[in-house]
Length: 119
Figure 1 (cartoon, rainbow, N blue to C red):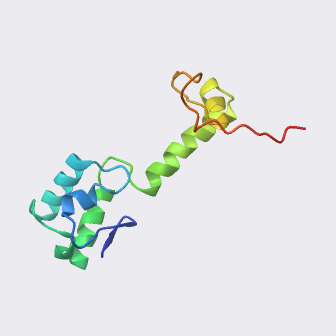
Figure 2: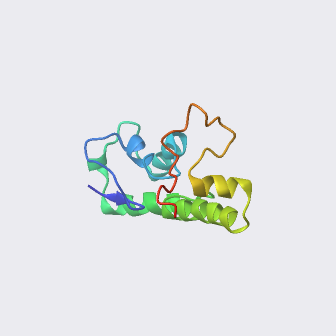
C-alpha cells in the first residue's frame, strides 16, 4: 500500500478515488493528476510503482493548491488569527458555536461545549 503525501492508497481501490482522499484534492483534480502521471481510468492501487508514486507526489506538490498537512496548517492559522484579533467569528470558533449565522435555538447542539465547572 503506497503512501502519497502521507495518505495511504489501498491496493484494491481505483486510483483516481484513492488520490482524491488526499486532503485538498478533489475528484476532478485527482483525475488530472492521474492522467499526467500516465495512469488510465481503471488503474488501481497495486499498479503504482515506487517511481510512479514519487511522480504523483511531485505532481501534487507542484500544483498551485495547498494539499495535505500544509492546507490543514494554513486553515488552522487563519482560525488562530481570528482568535487573536478577537473577531466575532473567532469567538464563535472558540466557543464551538456555529460561525456562519446558523440558528442555535434548536440546532447546533453538538458543537456547544460550555464549561460547566464555573467557579
